[in-house]
Image (cartoon, rainbow, N blue to C red; front, side):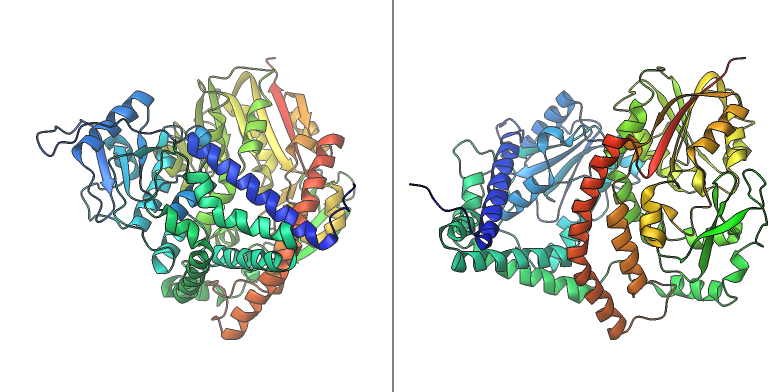
Length: 620
């Protein structure tokens, strides 16, 4: 007897069942990979503190000395410098949440991964604490503060941070499943509590709907969600034994609903963490009082690359990145195809429009984005594998050093230095992501660094500079004969630039001042004594064309009401922004799907929205 295929409406249940099943299996495998500290006989006195270690604990958490000694022995044996200790009786939902965020088998070796933990106790070397500027003798943190600290400490021990279950450590109770405390903990981990609470409530509503209306498949999906805590954590060999496991399983739908409502309410009550402060808003008002025309130079009549006067407007856009006042024009040369900002920003204009984007108000968000580009960083580093084994590498425009940090996994014996205009390069030096950080303009450092490096990289850097040809001259000076220059740039000849027009993200106005076609860059390199040995287009593609277009359009329709350079937020502007965000959600989902297809096509056809060149400096 044949069974009829699933009806269209039951596909929702089938998809939910498959997603919940995959999540349950993944959590079970991750739980199995959690290491457990050896059990050491308890003692209350007479135990010396191992030199060089500090145990930071949240208020109310009192680990016994044996747990401290076992943690130190385990960390030293594994070569760790930061170790988050998980109470064996960690509450079920907190345990499941942690397993969703962390893959224990990969956590230590993910140099760009964010620091995660339970928020109860963290073992840290004194050397890491000193570099991170943390005073271990200060007031004891609450769990949210300890979670934020763990996230920060991993940056200073990028490949030497781990987690372990401490059988002798107790969380002391079930904890608050939602509300202000949970909202604070989510924010401390860089997660939006309001959005997560809304997703949780929406998921519960969807499960309830399929359970009632879609028969066995719907009931199976709802039942799997209900039993998930026990299925993951209830096995006899589980390293975590939540004290609330039975209650968390039996009452999961009710507890999840209550936690979601309380967290959503707390998120609305506390508002945004980055709401404008009075001093920042006052500084922007003062800057804008004289208007934005002063931030632009006079329009030039010729192409800065080839000198041709055959110019045409390519695109005119406002600031779609931050919504700051101003309008910007990119023109294209009819002879060489070079695209450039005309009129370009003055140095004062660059400072104004960069402010609060990579640091300050936007610093955390920018760091999160850069931290998720691990595959791109590895591709850039691996491009050099067939050509050299460098000892010294200078990354120009390094920002906070994310590329250098990730590239160490490919080139562990290479010395990575970084150069950038911003203060982030100093942070990179303190974290150990670069050996030496140079802060300033590259052409100014070129005479001091002449001939010192085997590799110089400029990844999405040249398009930000006022004179890219001078930057190439500096690279030629800094490289030793036979050294390599690696460059990655947006491709102004991309089909998506024509299709999406002003909403094409790589226009990136007002920050991008020059977008050079690959042929122009090859010619400029040849003029400076370089031979191009490799060129990549598809592998350099950044899969954000459609997603970026939706984000820029949403910003254009409803800028952030809390931006300190805009008018004071009102109920109307907040409601409009919220409405646009909600309306954009299905657009973002569709854009992500389109970007996946677009990326696959770019890889296959070698035609993406960016390109990479690797050039060798001739020895003659």
